[in-house]
Figure 1 (cartoon, rainbow, N blue to C red):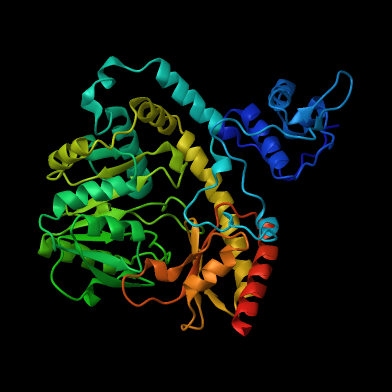
Figure 2: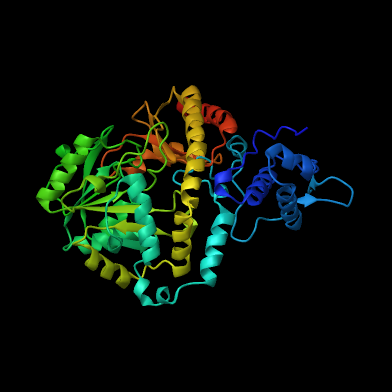
Length: 472
């Protein structure tokens, strides 16, 4: 009779590489201390039967763990967790400790760090196959200087993906492949802001890196208020803009989704003023409880929107791959500016990513991570409301990798509070950091590396720390 598999051990059969999935699941639990030294692992035959895979799959996973030092095994005896596990493979880092445990350590950490995906969940085996295959067999015409702004395979694969998931409409020659979204903002800002002092409208609150890049390009920033319906151009003060930076699908950092009425008003302003809208669509693939709203670019009929996307949030920042889908009239000049800047992504990485998308690997990863992040967001929202609701107003957490909260007491110095909390192993950001003008104090939490079973204890500790600080 087959045994029942552990509740934490689930394999995604649509993603393939069942051996790799099993290996990573066991490795990660060992690294997290959830399988202590000396613990006996089930025989490969019974484990394979319980999860419905071939015995060779379980044997292969065990052999990889033994080879890397995670397991001890002697002939005729059971496999056990090693007393001293080996270090992770080169280029990998062990997952962050559970949130509940890291709070007990008085050092800086990464618990609740905003904007960083779950790096331990990166599909290493599938990516390695795509990368290795392309590195061994790159096409000759992709090896020259002609692909400086992106190889055709990746441009087409990206367009297929964003057309299906975000409603983006464009041709491959409008797609620029760059290393980061920051590089895309820099290239386009320096191209569009012709004179020092040209006006750029910026969401308030908004993304600090975008603020810095626009200033470096010579822009005079005009903050435009955001509320629950997104940026409100009717409340903009000052001269007409040359450039407008927005995050309409999932406003950073508040998480608001721009309403259709506000989107149409924004497009009207851009058209009438001759401005270009930079639509930063950084993590809108992650929506919990509803379908992702279509991109602003998809309803743009005046060719005023440049759509920016990145694989840093949906896969890993370490890939260093982002892209810009620019209006047709801007594409030749933008491509020339990008080539001059030299922000080139290695051709074998581009080719491998094109295969990864076309083979359905990205879609499977997003489906798996959307479910995982939804559970982590729900657990974080519930725990913070339960234990910190007397101090913080907690956002809805409808999507993305971060959760905005605001202090009920608007006189609080959120930078000082964040610094004090971060000394207890957190990586929170004060909401005031995202404002150009006067700020509403609050804290920004990341949810991607939270463990649902540990977040309640972490929130309780945060609530106590906040209460202790308030009584001083």
